[in-house]
Amino acid sequence: MGDEAASGEPVPIEVELVEEDPDTLPDAAPNTAASELETIRGGTAGPSRLTGLPKALRLLGALAVVAALTIALWPVPGRHQAGPRPGPSPTASSPPAMNVDLYKVRVSGTSLSQDYRDHAVMGLALTNESPSQLTVVNAELWDALGTRLGYSATWPAGYVQARASETLAMYLPYSCTVLITTPVLPVTIRYSVSTPEDLSISHNYDYPLDPTILDQFMHARAGLCTGPAGGVFASAVGALHPEGDHHDRHSFDILLTVDATGQTGWTLHEISANLPEVTITSPDLPTALADGHSTQVRVHWAFPDCLAPPRWGDGVSAVQVTARADGAAADGSADQRLMVYLRPELMTGMVKVACWQ
Image (cartoon, rainbow, N blue to C red; front, side, top):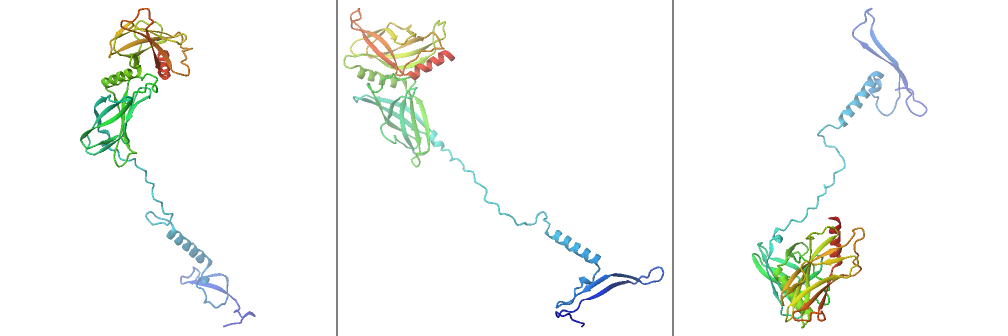
């Protein structure tokens, strides 16, 4: 085939590529084109046809290949593309479904039993108007400032069958020495209803206590706490808006409920408080109070300045009511002085109402 180099490789040769066109030029000369010299190297592989093409054609061919690859790889709409697989979309936790049956238990009645020495038992009748059996988790009796006056005898307090009524027992301690302060009206029944399967989901109710039941309990408590000799006893206190012609706005009223116990009637003569720069009066005194009955006394409180309101001290505020038994000496030697202890929260709240209403 030709000479070989010392390395055994065929000796490269240089050739000139000539391309003829069958159409002749105007002067009848042959239409030919010659490229620059091309070097052809030998080797084990066969000669490449591309190396026999002009550089312009090879450049065009390379550009065509690049264009073809670009078109083949360019993403088009709808074509599946490899990419990161999306993770599962987070599922928002939905709140538990509301059990409407829990909202269908109402108070259908109350009763009071006073057969015990240190407490009364109140019967709380509840009616379940739902189609499911429900659980009464607990039942309690509270005054307006958060003093608990009674509680259910067991826990859970009981069960109420579907579309039926059930009476639950509540203990109401007389607490003569424990419950020092006078309960603040209104008094409410609070009970919680749930399902037997899940006591953690419940609905809470708040019902006003029947005033008749409250009067019966307070009178029984007064009779126990005053002792065999009887006397007068403050059973409840409530807040009122001031009445009458009070030209100063630094004032408020409370309504004091007083019970009489024993074998005779009483007359309430006077009310006072040992509080500096505070005056209290009552338009309802003097007033007669029959044995076994109660009366309400409006008490008006006045103080001179809201910039320096009265301080109730660290303890409770004590109000003194002076009472005289029917037939007792008129000189007051047999008068009874009842100390009524009022909650500091009540008095502070009334001062705020009086000063910033």
